[in-house]
Length: 364
Image 1 (cartoon, rainbow, N blue to C red):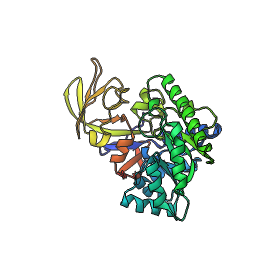
Image 2 (image 1 turned 45 degrees about the vertical axis):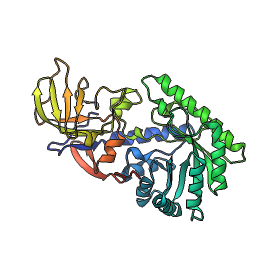
Image 3 (image 1 turned 90 degrees about the vertical axis):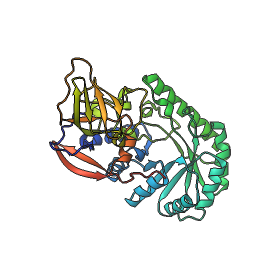
Image 4 (image 1 turned 30 degrees about the vertical axis):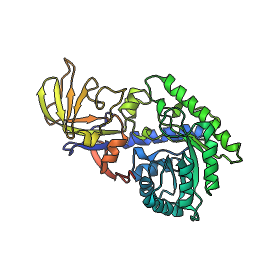
């Protein structure tokens, strides 16, 4: 990201290039539309009302979110078509909140167990709008989700609980990898397991309308077929991990953390005023260090504390002066956004807007 920063910028800060952001949004929307996929982007990556509005204007059917509180935050700013792509386990508090959402929004919720489906059905029984459910399937990431043959049992329990079983979904976490073959294999795994799970529902007489998959690494590998919805998230900004696994280029990085050089203890080392409370502490097996440095691509953030980032440079590379502004692309963009109160929108060395992080800390 070569975005020139304003002089005197208060750091640390998360800075957005709106032109790159809009290009990323348009490119994904156009690609999905041209290949016949509905796009329901995952808003946990940006958590921001202004970015959600851009995605919806570009043609997104609605938003995916990770938590009830994220759904509440986006419902408050007028988004009324939401998929909680998570196997929500309802306690008393979440039951009341989900019921209010169901009364006011077109709501879809993930399930992956008979017990979870039964709780959900009880919670939203009699709501003003019917609640759709998608059964989560494990396509290879081995996180949550049932095996494809078990989707029928969960779907039947949801239907018996009075829920509208709309289809199936998955998350292809195993699509992260250095080579294109890993992403290709993960996409094929998604297609196969989702198709098998959808058929398990159809065998029980359930009308399968939604077959949902796709993350930023695998979305470009999808082939038109039975799958009809994609849910990428990170693509709006991209990050150091996406850059390392070649799902984006440097020109596609739309967000950086701006930092100031606060110490230059040696010619091969400098320290920035940005730490884990801004960048997050995610390590990536594909990135050396704690982030990517566009101005010093050969540099490595070797140490990260709460408010310090130590950068090492190879021999012969000249470092920045004390007080200089340096940008860092986080390894995983979702965590820094969740930690930030606002995103600074910069064009031509000026802050042209400040976007509040609408769903900041919305983790319940």
